[in-house]
Structures are given as C-alpha cells and as structure tokens.
Length: 112
Length: 112
Image (cartoon, rainbow over all chains, first blue to last red; front, side, top):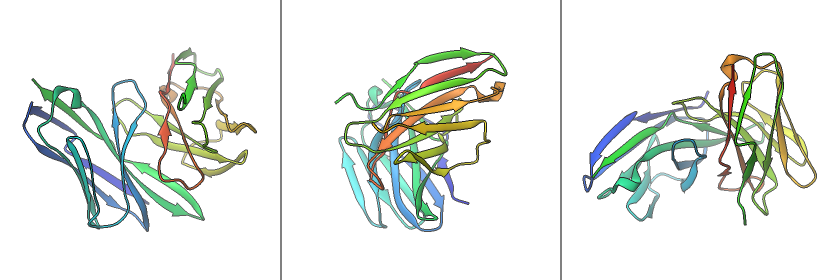
C-alpha cells in the first residue's frame, strides 16, 4: 500500500525565516510527486510536479526537490501570505490506472 | 476559463438521507476524480471517472456512487448518510493520464 508521510504536522515561522517541509513516501513505481497549497475551506492549489530523483522546481519563494525516498519543499524568506497547509501527493499506476495518495499536510503559519 | 466548479458550496443533511454533489471540470479536461477530506486530514481518493465510466475506486463503500456525463461533468452520490460522512468533498479534473489535477473549491457536507 502506498504511504505518504509529511513532517512536521505544523510549523510556525517568523517572516523571513527560511525552512523546509518534508514528504517521505513508500510506493511501488512512482509516477510523479505533487505539491499543493491549500487555504482553509478551499480546494488544493497545484504548485509542482516532480518525476525523478534529483529534479528541482522553483516558484517565487518555493523550491521543491526530490530524492528516491522523499521530497522537500524549501521556503525562502517566507511572508505571512505563505501561511497555508502544504500537501504532498504521489501518483502510481495500478492495473493500468493512476492512483493518487495524499499526505496529511503541513500547516505553515508565518508570523509578521 | 472558470476552472473546476462545484455545487453546492455547503450542504446540511441528516443521517440516512441521500445527497448529490456536482462538478464541472476545467475546459479541455476529460477525467474527473472525487476526494473526501475530513477536517485536519489529507484528501482521500473516492473514485475516478473517464469516458463516462468509473475507472478506479478507493476504499469507500458502495453507498458512494457517481456518474459522468457526455460533457465530462460529474456527480457524486452518497446514500444512507452517516455522521462520519461529514467532510469537504473535492472534485479534481485532468486530461487523461495528465500531469496535473486541478481541484475545485469543494462542497462542505455536514451530516447531523
């Protein structure tokens, strides 16, 4: 069974204090790892897709990296508007069809 | 492009009732997936529809059923509602085997 574990569950940062969120996974045949941002009461907003170990993607203050067992979401000099829950998900194929499994998320709070 | 839309936004039902949730996918997308997200949890995959057929199903009972129409829109039906069905129900659309799933804002279902 595919498993996705995110840590920490909650993170409180001062504005400008850089940090990283972790997503570790145990799957059979990774076909993509996704990062989403979710604001309270809203649907997840797509951030990145990573496919292979060593791959990196950046968007504004966010940078996602991937190894064979985990992914990191690095947040550089965060601002209060970066406060949200960040979800990690993995895609695998089973019986010819894709399956997406989400982690529980990391709730990030950035204090001014 | 309106993106993924869902209706209604909020819904209150009582135990034993039945509910239908609706989703219109992003323009150009032909695959619709439904997720259940309990408070403080990551989204849990319910099922996926493609070409008007259920293609993949998560660990949800038969009380959860769905439909996809020729215009790719979709419905999620839940029968015999339980208190534990209270959650945010998310619809996500993608191109078949596409890289990214785009989520709608969700329907908040409360079962009393």
